[in-house]
Image 1 (tube, rainbow, N blue to C red):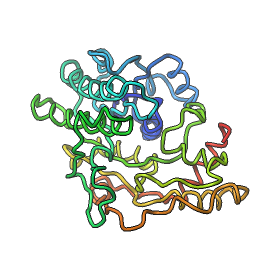
Image 2: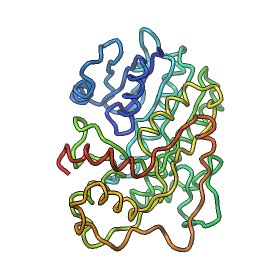
Image 3: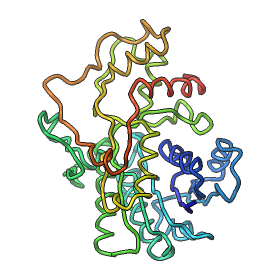
Length: 337
């Protein structure tokens, strides 16, 4: 059993990480923004005792010193899994709503660990493919993205629109984390997860149709008949199941050979068209309610991906898109989709 601090515990990815940790017998303290969020998590895992699942309040991850007390524990923490970061495009001030929380939240927790939690040996941070992908060069047929790639976005470009702000927030925060490690030389190692589109089942007590993660909103909209006329393009046409991503976080903390590395965690290609076709197979009454046109895989070629490190070092066997759809639909229907 390992004592673990998990940040942002009510988030879509985090709650799957939490579930996997609890299933493996670990003892977890998770940070939440409010007591209401803590109670929602308790209701999701009702039979877990306080020594296995407890909470610490961090109301604003962008506040200096926000994690100074959260990293203290008895028994002391050995791992910190940092998933808390904004991912939504409902933004009025890009710097205040996206860049600052991601940057300050990430460097803040690393400073707090170094200062107040010498027992922590492993830190895993949820970054994103957004910190790898270079949107300036389009679909880039023939090019293979891997962990060696970094998004070259600048601060000036970051504030142009929310999508650029999100990509920049992940890029700058991850870069700051690696920079901290190099300059501060703390007792702990660092590993980052860099997933693309993240789909998969939700926990109905923690989500509403309006608060779904951005990726799952596509499935919701198809179920609700909002793509009756045309299916939009997929954007980034690579994906991962949230359950595989959760397991990758934990294996990254467990395995010596994962330390000091980035992981481009993707199951591979998908398209909105393929998503729609799998949905109709799963929910036959959607036939005729989802457009027959649009959402195809981009013409003219697409970049390639190298996920060999995730498979070889972490031993992840990726779920199929069809299995993801099959398992996700009932959870969305449970909240009214």
